[in-house]
Length: 378
Ligand code: SF4
Figure 1 (cartoon, rainbow, N blue to C red):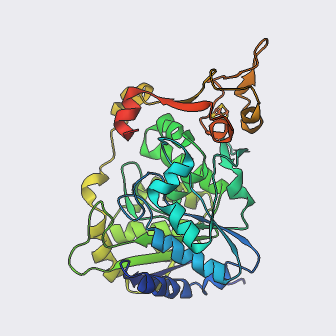
Figure 2: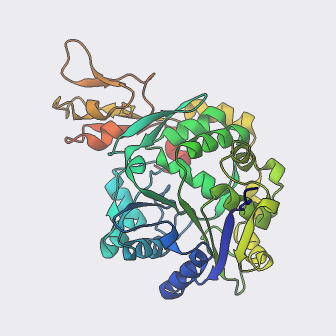
């Protein structure tokens, strides 16, 4: 009879304020999984997928601590890997390059010798699942190893943003907003997360749970924690237990486990490293439960038509070079009869920002509703 193997979730505390101790904490955590050598070989291309969904400076609010991301990248570089860093923001004020400067990831990547990848500019590949088609950035599919680096925080729809939720950033552009809008309920978003996760399964997920995440703080002398696993579903399951969630209500974990994408019950998971009770006290306080109430779906359905963002072609600037058309994955950008200038068929457009990112004349801009501007402050 074959041996049953349980996924391991490795846990270690770490001081996020001290880069040297942070790296030690990271190495200690990964030691529980056999070290990074169990995941990365010389010559491989490793894509680090942090949480850069918003243009806050790294390490504040919902955005990844970039020193943490740098520490992961350094370990991969020491293994002889080529290190890429990429994520797609939820909303964009100007260009992705500006966004990289605002978050600080541009400076960290330059300092460490990592390459930043523009998920939008790379274009996307249509990938179908049973009931939908998702457009995944080609930059993600081209990497040999994907390391998912979520930052633990509250999320109105999924309870907390962990490993499964962080994978959503592989969808370039405002597609993510469209998908949130499509369902506007915890269950439908969970289905979307699991669909995307089934198409892009990170080789390793390393979650940062700092004592202070800018949204709330653990208080006292609570340490931060690092959790890592090759099974993202198992990692999210452990985090759910730590946070005191009812696993029956964690839809994404349930759907992913039911689909055989990972283990979603605590009895089937081995926790290696520090005692969970120690983690529980610190993390529970660091993710405020006040924001964890789910938003009523009906209210969201009412505002949904007012929440939009779309690409528009500026005919005064466009010189008709056609570069954007080549990158449009849905053929929404086309030159109509009698015109030199492309136009967008919004019934086909998925808002991936590929045309905008690839226009050499910057003739494609983003336009958003007043409500979107208010909500996202763009
Ligand atoms: S027109 Fe095409 S390339 Fe531009 S955002 Fe829409 S789908 Fe993407």
